[in-house]
Structures are given as structure tokens and as C-alpha cells.
View 1 (tube, rainbow, N blue to C red):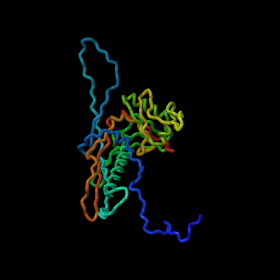
View 2: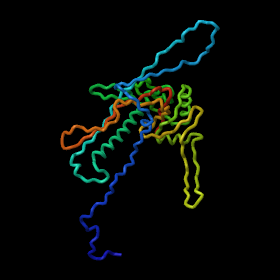
View 3: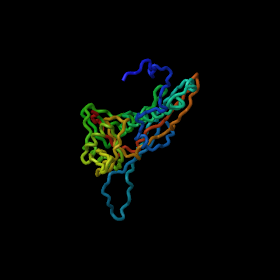
View 4: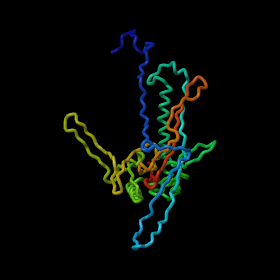
Length: 321
């Protein structure tokens, strides 16, 4: 049907109020599983140190009656350390904002400060996973912490055909990536799990990217696909393809998909053998007012502590596509 002549409709009207919901939708990922799992310990210096030790290998131990006792050779502990890294974000909002009525938030400064705090946590997670050597820093260079790949040297599976190599293992240098990565596989995974067990480790979690998680779903015995049919009217039909844990003779680990680690790296971790040394906990502070604006800063200073790298492992140089 046609509209009657001279009908004044909504297209002609001026002054119709906008219809804007009083909510902001944001689905950006903010999970930080490794950072959240790490125990937080107190750091009291920009160079945070700890010690590791190991038992000698077993040996034949039989003695003659009445024989003099000789002391066993003793070895010193190993001293390791990592530098604290300063994570800092700030926001500046003109004071005009105080007089504005906005949708989805009462005060822009509060909303933006919360947002950068979440972003900073993602930056921390990325740094903990990053293949980065520690940097002492100076008056012109920022301190940097050594990420997880820089510590793992004992229980590793990597490619060495095109420059791939382990780091020293004390945080002073990064792992050397190989130029010819190969596909992540169950064989690689089981090999590292066995190595960790032989060293005495008890891994409980595997951090890996979505791409590598799909590879893990193809592990023999891990693909749990089944159809669930609702028996009554209105029931649901679903296909389940899920993997919570992987049980091996060398231990049971939970697979944890992560977004901030490099996809080429798969980490098998004993959670209680990693910690975060916190020099300055996350703090939201007002910055000095220098004009017609309000500024706030979110700052955290911390480092990664690898208590004993023999309790964890890495499968490096995996293809990512």
C-alpha cells in the first residue's frame, strides 16, 4: 500500500532523540592463565635471585663393618636471577568530560583506567611467555625480564637443522629459533613428558595456542567425540570434542589454550615451580595536574621466577599453519 499524501513520518521529523543503550559491549579476551597461576612472591631488589640444587645420581653404596667414614663430596647450589620489568600505562582525559552525560559509563577517566589495567595484565602475560633475555637496563635502557623460553634447557624438543639451539638457561640469552619448524605431535609431547619425569618433575599444565590445541585433539586416545541425543521433546543434540586432561605414564596434565604465548612454543609446566617476584604491586595513581585534564597511571613492577627448570619443558619450533 502507498503512504497517504502529505504524511509527516519519522524520516521528515527533526529532533527525535537518539536511542543508544547505556552499556558497552566488549568481548576482547582478558584471561592470563600463566600469570594468574604463578604464585606471587616478594621481590626487594630490581635483580631478584633464587637458588637451585640437585641430588647426585644413585650409586652402589655398601661398606665394611667398622670401616672409617669418609664424607661425600658436596656441591654448591646454583644461584640464578631475573630483572624486574616496569609495566606502565596512563590515560589523560580533558576535564570537559566532567560536564558530559555519556552512555555506558559515568566517568570516562574511571572507564579508561580500568581498560588500561586489563591491557597491562595482557602485556605481563605476553612478557612471561616471551622468548626474551633479561636486560639489566641503565639510565637510557629499560630493564627487561627473561621469559620462560630463556630458562628451559633440560626437557626440550626443538629443531637444530637450521640454527635452532638452547639458551644458556640462566636468563642471559634467548632460545635460538630454528628456521625449519615441524608439526607439533604426540611423539614430541610424550618425549618431553618422559624427560621431565626422569628429572623428578611433576608437570600439571600444558600451555599452547589454539592452533596447537587442535593438533593435540588428534592425539591417540584423546579425541572424545560423541553425540548426545535428548530423550524428550525439546531435548538437545550436541557433539562433544573436548579434552580436559592428558593421562600418560609420566603424569597427568591439563591442556590450557592461551592467546599470549608464541604459537610455535608449547610449554609443559609444573605450576608450583614458577612464580612472579613482585617489587611493586599493581597500583592506580593520579598523576600531577599540569593543565585542563586529569591523568592517571597504572604501574606494576615484577619479574619471572623459574624455581627449577628441570620440573618443566618446552616443545619449540612447531609449525603454526
